[in-house]
Structure formats: structure tokens, C-alpha cells
Image (cartoon, rainbow, N blue to C red; front, top):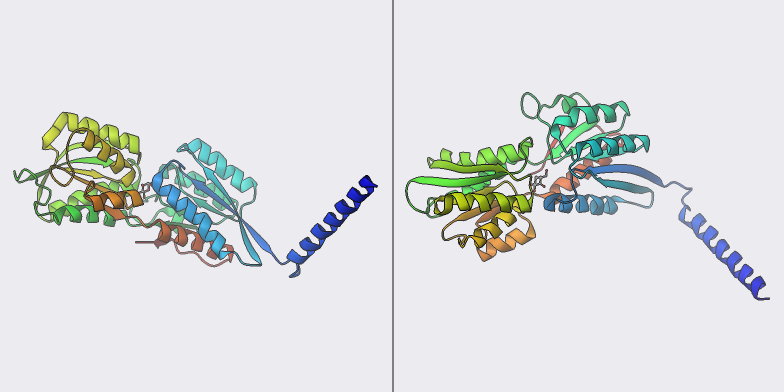
Amino acid sequence: GNTQMKKIIALALVLVLALSLVACGGNGGNVTTYKVGVAIYQYNDNFMTLYRQEIEAYFKTLETDTVKYNITMVDSKNDMAEQTNQIDTFITQGMDVIILNLVQTSSAEVLIDKVVAADIPLILINREPLGETDESYPGIINNPGVCYVGADARQSGTYQGEIVLALDNKGDINGDGVVKYVMVVGDPENPDAQYRTEFSVKALTDAGLTVKELVKNVGNWDQAKGNEIVDAALAQFGEEIEVVFCNNDGMALGAAAAIEAAGRVVGEDIYLLGVDALTECQEMVKAGTMTGTVLNDHIGQSHAAVDAAVAALKGEALQNYYWVN
Ligand code: GAL
């Protein structure tokens, strides 16, 4: 009795399930599912977290009844060997397109070669491999299936400098005619870091100011490192430091804590600049605990990257470079 009943119910469920499957594939089974592999240099990065979440969210909005995106996203944990394995795995898994945020731009060629040999379109994001002359990396310009999507890092540096120029004292708090600053660098081999470092200061010198660099140190985009660097700089140079430039907001958050711990007051006896415009930092700028931050448009960049991936999936030709500013 009871067992028989259970069997009938079970059978009924199987039928319902089978019918609903038929209903879903009702348009002649015409659903195309694209396999998308995404490797992010490191999940533990404020800006790249916003970026990668938006990649997934935006792919979802592009899905239709007949087109689906099956995204496999991996954390390369800031380890180039790990990322190389992940790309090998993507190739074995037969990804239809790969979006790659390189751990090391110096390894771009090796990975590009692998992906191109497997005939998979490759969208490089956020970390631009540079060629002999800017904007002409051979692996990008010579391979129609490879492109780079990013922002012009020169601009964010220049804007940082312009924020300082807009201050009444133009960063020269003690009025001795020299703007003395600390530079917290993101990552030594990343053009984002190089350009922001160079162009923030260039904006000041182009405006005729005299500057002096007291400390320049690499913080790898990391909050804790930004804290250590600025903490040590304040211990060494104290009141002499007038401006702290950080290549990103993550490090600026660490710097802000070091500044506060040293009893210094942003906006009064020191200035603090970041890049990315993280929500947290926008709040700090409003509250005056940070002097300024520059927008790094994770929405525009992630959408441009996904749009390029979708174009490649449709067999459309890719541009070499997509600039988002
Ligand atoms: C930059 C961003 C940094 C960090 C870095 C990673 O564009 O400003 O916060 O995310 O990319 O490569």
C-alpha cells in the first residue's frame, strides 16, 4: 500500500520533471551556452572585487532564452605559476573565450601564445602589457583574437595632481616653496602604477611647482602595505611630509590609518590622495579625512570587457585596444 503509493508519487515526479525539461528546451533545443573562463590576478583586491562582480552581473543581463553564459571565474592568488595552470585548464576545458587579468604583465607573451594556439579569443583586462612603444604590444596587435581593455592610467595620475593644484596652498603646507611628498606605488611592473606615479607629480611640476620626493615605496595595491609604508615615512620625516600620493584607494586607506595614528590631520597638516573612488573613500573625501580620489570606472571597464568577449563569441572582429575613461 504505502510503498506502492510512494512509487506512484515518485513516478509522477519523474514525469513532471521530464515534461518541464521538454518545456524548457521547447524552442527546438536551441539554447547556446558559451563557456567563459575568467582569471583574476587576486580576489583579495578591493577594486578587482568590484570589477569581477560586475563581470558576472553584466554577463547575466546579456543572457536571453537562447543564449547563456557559463562563467568559470578563478582566483590566481597573485601567483603567476598558479595562473598559468589555470589558463592551461581553461584551454583543456574548451573555453569559448577567456578574460584574463594578468598576475605579471611580463608573462603576457607566454599566456597569449598558449591561448592563441588553442584558437580561443582572449580579452586582457586591467594590467596592460607594454611593447617597445606604448599601445602596441606585439601579442595584441598581431593577433586578431586578442585585445586589451583598460583605462588610461596617465589620466588618473594627472587628476591626482590637479586635486593638489586646486588647493589654496597647492600642497605647500609650510609655505617653503617645495611640495614634499611620499609616493606609495602599486606594483613596479604595472603601467597603471608607473603612469600614476609619474603623472601625479608631473601635473605639479608642469604647473611650475618645485617638488621633493621623500619616500617612494611599493605597496602592491595592498592596504596593510600602504599602512606600513606611510607609518615608516611619518616616523622618519614627520612634519616634513605634506602630500601622500597613493596609486590606489586600498593603500590610501592604510595610509589614512597611519596618518591618524601619528596624530596628523588630513586637510590641515597633510594631504592624502588615492585612485579608484571606492565608496568608502568617497565618504572619506566628503568627511575630509581624505583629500581626493580619482574615479576608476569598474562598471565601464567590466562592461567593455564583456562586450568584447561577446563580440568575439559572435565571430566579430576585435579592436586591439578598448579604452574606457
Ligand atoms: C588598478 C586599481 C588598483 C588595483 C590594480 C590591480 O587599476 O586602481 O586598485 O586593483 O588595478 O591591477
